[in-house]
Amino acid sequence: MFFGCCILKSGKEREEVEEKLKRITGKLIREHSLEEEEYRYLIDHREEVRDRLAREARRVTEQIYGDEIFVRGLIEFTNICRNDCLYCGIRNSNENVERYRLTEKQILDCCAEGYELGYRTFVLQGGEDGYFSDEVLVPLIRKIRREYPECAITLSIGERERASYQALFDAGADRYLLRHETADEGHYRKLHPERMSFRHRMNCLRELREIGYAVGAGFMVGSPFQTSRELAEDLKFIETFRPEMCGIGPFIPHRDTPFRDEPAGTLELTCFLLSVIRLAWPSVLLPATTALGTIDPRGREKGVLSGANVVMPNLSPTEVRRNYELYNDKICMGDESAQCRSCLDMRMRTVGRRVVTDRGDLRRTPREEVNEEESRKKNGTE
Ligand code: SF4
Image (cartoon, rainbow, N blue to C red; front, side):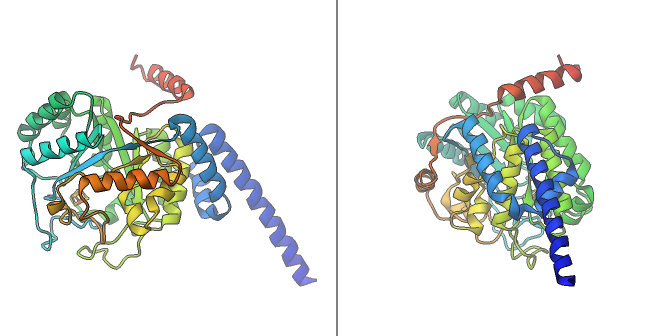
């Protein structure tokens, strides 16, 4: 009798869970918006909806981007950084890193090689290195802009003042990647030293957008102290801020950081979140990150099957690549740029996708165009 009641009770509970999951996934697919608690519920019960959401995410990606995969040529031009983020392998206090800065010529050579290989976006990424003032960067960006007028120039060089962002934009940069890392201020405090400010970082993202950059945000999956509550906040932030690009990858510990013994994030949760992000903000440019390829040999392909549509192969000179190790065992350290490119072409073909020679700008759906216009009118920006 007692046993039977238990079965009845758990059966009822099961039905309630299924019902709730059906309602939430339906809402996400139809309305592209959920409450934070609903995102959290999805994350906590993801086993039951993972496959369905991945299928939907693929369908939405194909509707907007077809079978196209956009590539960004990544140039890691300095590993010197004034910051000390607790998770980062090139943090300032890590004395085991051999520091480097590429010269202007080396950076321009990387662009030239990338252009030959079919890249139409260059991502200049580095630590917050005081050497690269506006006086140094503005002429460099102008040169790249003049040489490659049809290419996108993306910067990923951390927090700067608004006037600096403006000067770099005026010189010809048109996109800026600045992962928000976590949308929860308390969580941010646990991942960064005291002197770094959550509000300043979020404000940078807003300023970049106001200036006119296409903006990339993003976060780590499975970072220390993160629960489904913080992840739900991240998802809500992405849904409402709508960055043109959203980079998420599993947290992977680095041996020379305070988080060296923390467990890595998982492929499974990262792929699930890629699907949810695709459905929450359908047009978003969503990379299958190198970190995903590091925790699983087919991580990037699995990312694409979950809704990703961008890959970012490395264009940095091979001799410096091993010094830009943000986390343990980063892949593609020794490969020549041409090797990286053909390896990715082949990998993408195995999942029915095609790497294209294109700037890879965001393509809004007609419904998103209407929503954008309405929100511009509401905010009085027209
Ligand atoms: S995450 Fe970025 S800002 Fe932080 S220490 Fe590393 S390179 Fe510097």
